[in-house]
Picture 1 (cartoon, one colour):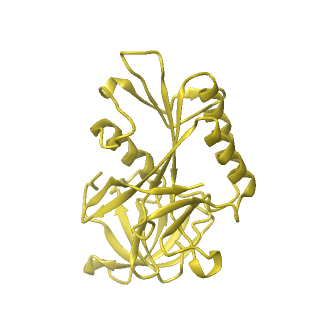
Picture 2 (cartoon, rainbow, N blue to C red):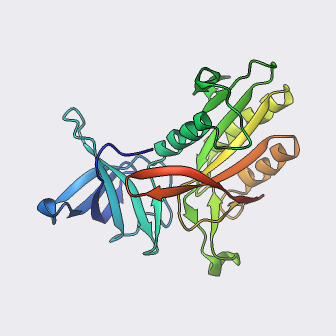
Length: 248
């Protein structure tokens, strides 16, 4: 994906009320020093991704109808890694990759075979991939992974990313739906999109949500597939690119 115009840069003052962030603009130079409130499209805890003073990147929608025309997109973590905190971008990146058939484990015959937000039970999953050759459908649920673990506290090596970053009843429900679909003979995939330069391996965050971790292992044993791909950051956008190791 590419942004329509160059991103602004700034310094994070604070994130609050989940969807708001106060930021001091750094570039463009004509707006340097201006303090703005940007929309934060992330309902999670954003652990390690919201440190005061961190370098951030913003997209200006230039939409006069929006109350907050600026969207917080990227943040610099630990002074060296870019991470995308706009969780809506994960689905956009995965959709682009599916249509381009760059996710080697999933084959999409054509655009007409890919449906976004298919209705399942009383809710929705992220994608449905169909095929002309058989009756097996592929359901894909996407999760964004931005929690880079602290190896000193977890005992892990550098580069471990964790999901979830907070207790998630919604995520647990998605696992149950994927499990049921697999039991009915459909293909079910939990897809970890990793928009974080520092994460090289994904682990389930048992120390954060042990119930989710237990359920994830259960659905894995019953045939639900789990994939993880890292995002590559580019000057004007991002692309889903590199398969990552997963430890459950």
